[in-house]
Image (cartoon, rainbow, N blue to C red):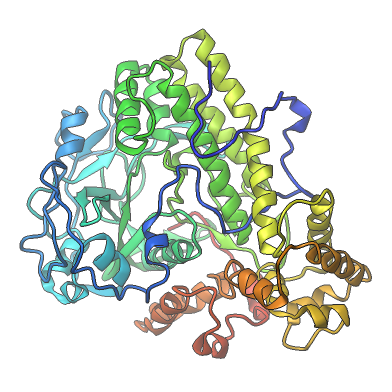
Amino acid sequence: MKRMKVKRTIVANIFKPNVMKIMIMGLIWESTVGIFSRGERTEFEASSDLECGSVDWSHYFANADNLGYSQINHKRISLDLWKLTSQKLIESFPLDPIKENYVRQVRDCIFSSVQPEPFKSAVKLVAVSKEVVEDLLDLDVSVTETKEFIQFVSGAQILPGSVPLAHRYGGHQFGVWAGQLGDGRAHLLGAYINRHGTRWELQLKGSGKTPYSRDGDGRAVLRSSIREFLCSEALNYLGIPTSRAASLVVSNDNVKRDQFYNGSVKNEKGAVVLRVAKSWFRFGSLEILAHSGETELLRTLVDFIIKQYFPFINATNSNRYLDFFSQVVTDTSYLIAHWMSVGFAHGVCNTDNFSVLSVTLDYGPFGFMDFYDPNFVPNTSDDEGRYKIGNQANVGRYNLDKLRKALTPLLDSNQQLSAEQILQDYPDLYHIKFMELFKAKLGLFGRDKNDDYLIKYLLKLMEDTRADFTMTFRQLSEITQQQLEAHSIPEEYWALQDIARHTKFFPWVNLYLSRLNKNIVDSDEARRTRMQSINPRYILRNWMAESAIKKAEGNDFSEVHLLQKILCYPFNKQTEAEEAGYSSHPPPWARELRVSCSS
C-alpha cells in the first residue's frame, strides 16, 4: 500500500526493538518553530503580528449558510443574535437514551445529554481572553461585562440552539486500562463557526455532575482553573497547538478537596473555565468503543473525524483509516516535540488526555521545568515518574499504539500490518523534527554531521550544572558573538554564568561559534533576532502561577491579569515582567512547590 504524503516526508525505517529509546541523553527536545504537518495556517499565526486581541475584523465576511451553524458577519455586542448549535453532533451520533443524570455505565452512544449545574452562590467573572472572545467567537469584549454572558459561561443559562452534552470515552491511565471515564465535570455547549469559517466547540469545565462523574462532585476549584486558564493561553502564544480558554468565573460555593491525598481535606472555591477547541475527541474516544465491541459506532466516529477534521484524506478510500492513523502519528510526535522545546511536562499523559487533533488538552498537574532535569516530574501523584519530562516521547508512542489497537476492528489483516509499520516511523519522525527545530533554537542553518553532538553536549552541560532551561537558550539568543568569543559572560546573563561554571562550557562555546560561522549569509544581529523570536523569555513557571493563585484566593486577581498580559508576548522583554522577577532566578521556595491530580 502506498503511504499518503501530506506536506512531509516520512523517513523509511525498519523498526528494531532496541532503537525504541527515542532520547538524546535521556531526553529528546525540540523547538517551538515549524508548522504541524497538517499544513494549516493557524489563527495564532494569522494574528501573531497584531496586538494581542486588538483586531479590526469589520472587513471579514463568511457565508455560513451551507455550514449548518450561525451566520456572523461582524463582532456581536450582545448574545441575542449569537447562536450555538449542537445539531451536527446530535445528528451524527446516537445519544444516550437515558435522560436522567446519575452515574452509570453507558453503552452504544458517544454523548449523553445533561444540563450543567449552576452554582448556588453568586459568581464573578475574574478573567477573559480578549483574543478568544473577539477573534474566535466574534463577540465584542464588552459583552463579557453583561449578566447574560456571566450566566452563560458559568452554566446558569443555556443559549438557544445549545444542547449540553457530556462525552463518553475511556482510556489507559498510568499504563492500565481504566474502562469508562468520560466528561465527569464538563459540558459541551455546542459548536460555533466564526467569520473565518472555523468551527469551534465550546465546553464548560467544572460545571457539575454527569453520568461519567464516577466518585467526583463535578466541580473544579479555583487554583486548578487559574492554572488551566493561564497555561492554555500561554502555550498558544508560544505557538504550541492547544485548547483555548475564553473565560474564568469563580463562586463562593465550597468544594472539598484533599490536594495532596494525605487526609488534609479543605474547602476551596468552585470555578468554571469556558474552554474552546476545534474538537474534544481524544484517543480514549475510540478506545471505549473498541473495548466495548461497538464496531459500527467506532466506524461512524472515525469517519466523522476524518470528514470533519482531515479533509485532505479521501473519505471513500479503503485505506482512509491508515491515512488517518499516519497523520495522527506524525502530528502527535510534533506536539510532544513542541512541549519539550519549552520544557513543558503535561503531567498526566493518559490516552484519554491525548487529542486526535494533536492539540494540548486537559491541563492538570503540568509544569514548566526550571533547571534542566530529564527526570523532572511535575505531578506528585506520579510516584513512579511514568510521565517525567524525559519520558514523554516514549509515552507518546505507547499512546499511539493504543490508538492503533483501537482502530484494529476497522482494518483487514494487511492493513493491520501496515498500521504497525506506520508506528515504526515515530522515533525517526520525532528525532528528525527535533534536530530541525532544536538547531533553530541555537540559530543554526543547514546541516552538519556534528549537530547531534553539539546539542547533546549542551544538554549534558546543562544537566550537570542544573542550568535554567528557558533562560540558557534565551541568553544564548541575547549575548553577542563577540562576547562569546572573548569568553566574557556579563552578569545579566545569570543562566549562562551558571553553566559557565562547568570546565567544558567554553570548549562547547568554541564548537558552537565554529558551527555558527558555517551559516551562509548571516550576521550576529540577525542570529540574535532570529533566536529571540523562538526562545521565550517568559514561561508560566509553577512559582509564578502559585503566587497568582495565593493572591486570587484572597480575591486579588491582579497577578492573574498580569501573567495573562505578559504571557501574551513571551518573546518580548517587558518592564513589568522584569520588575516582577519573571526572568530572574526562581525564588528558593519554588523548589518546594508541588502539584497533584487533585483539582
